[in-house]
Length: 66
Image 1 (cartoon, rainbow, N blue to C red):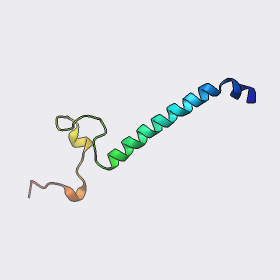
Image 2 (image 1 turned 120 degrees about the vertical axis):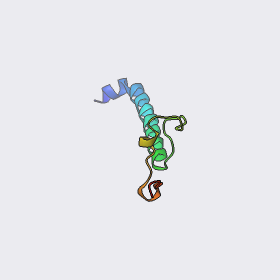
Image 3 (image 1 turned 45 degrees about the vertical axis):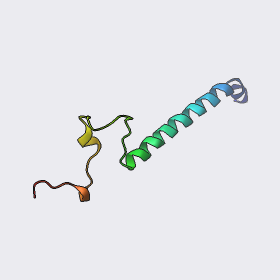
Image 4 (image 1 turned 90 degrees about the vertical axis):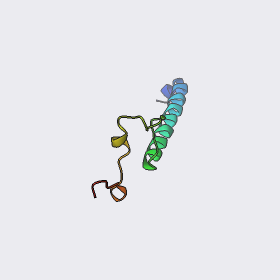
């Protein structure tokens, strides 16, 4: 086992760095989504999925029918 680790330490380090980068990106997306910000890196004003992506919260709905 120790010999295998010595032979592959470079690959293990690189995979660890890549895993940290991917984890940081995912953490950033989750945090932005919880804050209600766009996570797609583009403007949402022209997006067809805007109503699904940015749903209104129950207390803040615009009531046009009243």
